Length: 418
Image 1: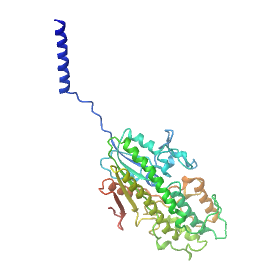
Image 2: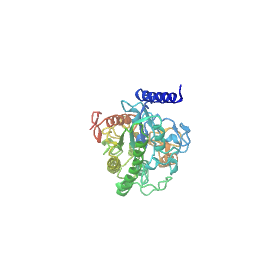
Image 3: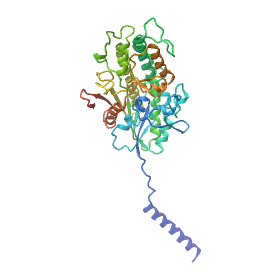
Image 4: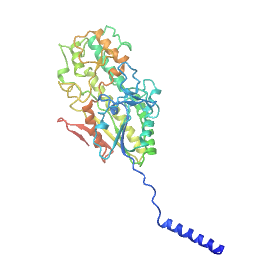
């Protein structure tokens, strides 16, 4: 065959092969869809503090930390207290295959992008954004629950609760002329005021801090989510205490909490889970509303910055109505929050009654909480049943067409979201 004919034939075959390849293109290998996931980020009200059944937590070094003992340092990763009973795990979320609780009790806005151990009293866990990125490598994140703002550079929920409860206990067991021997120094004996909990300036600073942290979350989600489709639910906070106590807790042995040394009343309220002055309750609720304002403002600001993102504000401030501590005479039975519970030394045994104890015993018990915060850190957080309620709230927020919803508990115990 002449050389030119072979060359022409080869050229013709090349053209035909190319045409066939174009006409009958081989399909690319199918990529398996990632499993869908819901993720929780934030602090104790999301991690499940108070709900028990705490699971091991992987620390910043990749080591799984189970319960380390009551005398272990409180910065141990385990004390993030990620509960199997947390609302994320109890919510009915159709279409969600896997759930990842990355929240940490005590979590602050700075812990979102920075390892918690980098700050004072932080826990030895990686930055929550790093944990989120790790989840996104194997999961299609469709739902994100965020609870952030109650702890920040200005104040923390734990310090606020500790302050008001300690003032009541000090007032109940000592006279105004006596020194209260507390590890942190003398303790005030008057009810908490609004300024004792958070000033307007502190709430403003906390809002800016929280907004900056959640902005980082949304930016990261848009970068790592497999299909770019996800709903973010911003949950706020519910107060564990009522607007006023049940009248059964007003006074005992002829003494109320407006005078010095009311030990019987102090023991009664502690047993019921609400060692606090009645006059502290209204400021406490305004503080809770302030926390809700932080969360709503954060959501609204970022909705304007991320108009394509699916952002929902979930108001749960009335989710425990009628079932708060000391709202009924059976408290803490039937309440949706954990009572304040202390230990007499890091023994693992909770003191449920202060009846008959003198001020020296009371000081020792109170100081255990200071030395080993893990012995009392569950106090005044939603319990497992409370997280069932919050799970119902989350389930509704996950499918609502609204941008803001309120979850309310009716007198008969039914939960509605509107």
